[in-house]
Each structure stands twice: as C-alpha cells, then as structure tokens.
Length: 322
Image 1 (cartoon, one colour):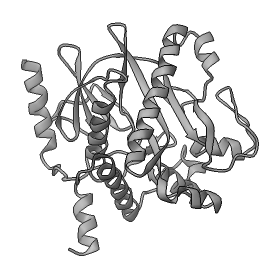
Image 2 (image 1 turned 90 degrees about the vertical axis):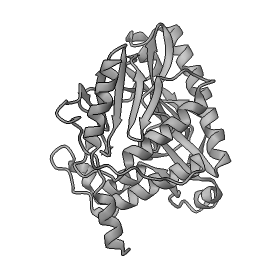
Image 3 (image 1 turned 45 degrees about the vertical axis):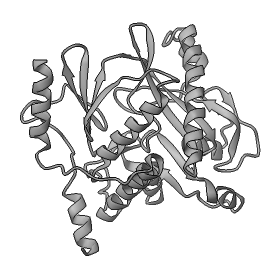
C-alpha cells in the first residue's frame, strides 16, 4: 500500500459527529457526545474531534476516539485503588457507559515540569501561576522542585482561566474539606501515573483531572492520563535535550498546539480556524497510536467506523429497555 493509499484509508475512518440514526446527543462537548440513559447512567461517545486553545477543528483525527477511550479505560482500571471512577463498561472502542455524577466546577492540573502553558507564562516574565510562586532560573521543560496543582475554571463557553486554590475556596466553588481531599487524591494520582509512565520509558510531565460527586463520594470523571489531558516526554532523551535546550520528544496534544504557534495560526483562532493538513492529521494519529501501544503494551487493532451510528442506536435502545 502506498503512503497516499495508507493515508486515505485512515482518513475514511473519522467520527466527527454522532446522531445514533436520528437521535441527537443530549450534550456535545469538545470531543465527547453524551447520551442520557436510565438509572442515572450515560453513554459517552468519544469522537475523533480534536481541539486546541479551546477551539474545535473541523478536520477529525482518524481513530483518535478509539485510542483516547481505550487509553482512558486502561488507566481508569489502574487508578481504582487511589480514587473511584465513573466508568461502568466499555462496550465499543468509541463508547463508555458511565454513572452520572455532579461535576465540580474546576479542573485540577498537576504539573511536574515547566512545560506548555506554564512555560509560556514563565517565558513572558511571570513568576506566579495560580497563586504558586515559581523560582528564578528555571529552564524550559525542567523538573519543578515539587509537583504543583494549578487549577483552571471549567468554562462552558470561551476559555478556561487559571484560578488559585484560595480563590476556589473563597469563591465557594468547592468546600475547603473537599478541596483538601481533591489535593491529596490528585497528587496521589499523579504519582501513580508517573510510576506507570516510567515503567514504559516515559515521563508524565503534567496532566488534568476532573472530578464529580456521587452519593457524597469523590469520583474521577472524563478521562485520565491520556494524550488529550496529559503531556509525556521520552525519558531516554530527556536529559540530553534539556542540556541542549532542545525541544523534548513528546507524546501529547501539544504537538498540535506547537504547529499552530509555529505557523502563527494561534493568533487568529477566534476569527478563523486553519485547515489541518492531511499529513498533520495522520501524524497526530500515529502519535496517539504510539502512546496507546507504549502504555498498554498491546498493538492497536482499529474497529472500522462505517455503520457506527446504527450500532450506537441499537446500544442506546438496549439500555433504554433494561
């Protein structure tokens, strides 16, 4: 198969929107379509949409949803001893059945290294991030003295914004006792994710956690330690690249953000989204696949997407009849 045939075959397998043969989602997020089910459950369809800088791009990434959902499921099972999660079943690589929780209005970002958004703030002279003081003299991608929790608001429209822990509590967003639990659990999850990554020759650089409440219990929701929510570096090249001030070889969605910045597209995203070239879309797919295979230790066997909406309609109907 030629490279052109390989690329076109992949690009024919993109789920951008779902309708379950006429039944529209009850909620459509940046990546996930949500269908409400009886018994306080929901079907979460992880599509192939991709977003960056809070913008959803019209061009989807082939099989991204399957890779993302399966990585999340692999990691949800691993973190169960640390924190309960909302996943009940994964009946299809694109679908998760989950219990419904009351989501908390903040996202918890844990950072172990000065990368991404944190580096951009630091590089522009900022020495405070979400109320946390950063020491002078740090280099891009250098390990922080200790992991930092740098929360953000969870915007329903527009951009998520940095927020301090003091502002979360003083603003009444989360009860102080609950926030202390969230801090403890988030750092424990980051420790476990870091250990799992290290066993696979990777460094967990930073990650985002979302939590909900179910029967007064803290529950991890959405996703965990995936390339959409996390940044990974290759451990074997880390020190050499750091010493040379060279970009780290990484597995994450930051690859798309960097492409947008390098081409100056990020400056005008509110007015015009650039078209994602096919070769970029294939490259992103291959990075997601590489991370899946590294983390799980198994080869990715994609499930063809034609007929998915009919399958989804049958699945939802089965749950409705239960």
